[in-house]
Length: 332
Image 1 (cartoon, rainbow, N blue to C red):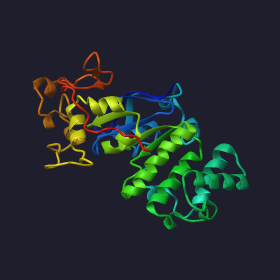
Image 2 (cartoon, one colour):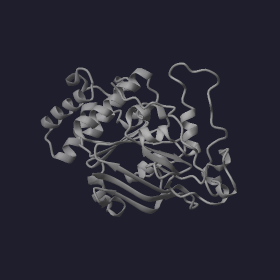
Image 3 (tube, rainbow, N blue to C red):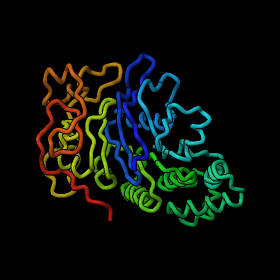
Image 4 (tube, rainbow, N blue to C red):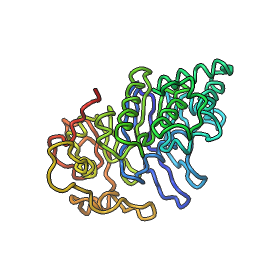
C-alpha cells in the first residue's frame, strides 16, 4: 500500500532556480527508502518540503504534489498541517543537539507530544515517555527521564530524538543522516534500531544518507539524487547490482572494500554543481565520461533502460549491467 507519493515536486529559491526539480518518489507501508546523494543534492530540502518546514521564506514549492494517504499536504491550511506534522509524518533531524530543547528534560520533551496529540494527563504522558525510552534502548529509562540533553552521549541523544518522533506514532518517519558524527559501533546500533522499529511498528522510513554502504544494509528501495534531480531509483538489490546511471555507478565504486581491497580508492572527478551555475541538460554531464552533446542540451527522462530492468534511470546513455559492487547483506 502506498503511504506517501511525491509527484513532480519543484522547489525554487528567490531567483527562481529549481533547487529540487520535478522530484517523484513513492513510499510504501513498511518500506525503508534510502534517499542518496552528495551534500547539496536536495535530499534534506525535499524531505523538509514533505514536512512543510522549508528553511527560510525565500524558498517555496512552485509545483507538484505531496500526498500522504491520498491527502495533498501542500493544499492544507497551516492549522491542519500542524495537526498532521508529527502525528502522521515525523522527522529525526541530523543534529539532535540542536533540535532537543536544552532547558527541558528528555522526559518533558517526549511527554509534551503525548499530551498535545493524545490528550494524555501528566502521569500518563510520563509513563508513556518512559516506555518510549525503553523502546529505543535507553538504559534505566525511569531515571533518564529527568536528564537534560547535555547529560546524554551523542548516541543516546539520537535515540532520544527517535523517541520524541515516535511519541506521536507517525506512519512515516524521515531520518536525516541519523548516524552523522557517531562512531561506527553506535552507527550500527542506530541503524539496527530503525530496522527493528520498522519491523515491530510497521513504520515506513525515508533514510537520508550519502553512504551507499548504509543503504545496502538497511533499505528496501533506493532513490539517488544529483543536483536537485532524481537520477536513478529502484529496488535496492537490483539497483546496486545493475546501476546504469554513471553517477550511481560512481557512488558505488567510491565505496571502500570491506575486505581484500587493493589499489587506490576510486573517486568521482569534479565537484557537485552549485545552484547559481546548474548546467543545462543533464546536470551530471560535466563530470560524466560518457556525456555527449545531447547530454549537454537535453534533460533525460526517467525510464527503464532495458525491458528486463524494472528500476528507472534518467540517462541518455545508460551503462551496461555488471556484477554488484555492494552485496546488500542485511543486518543479523
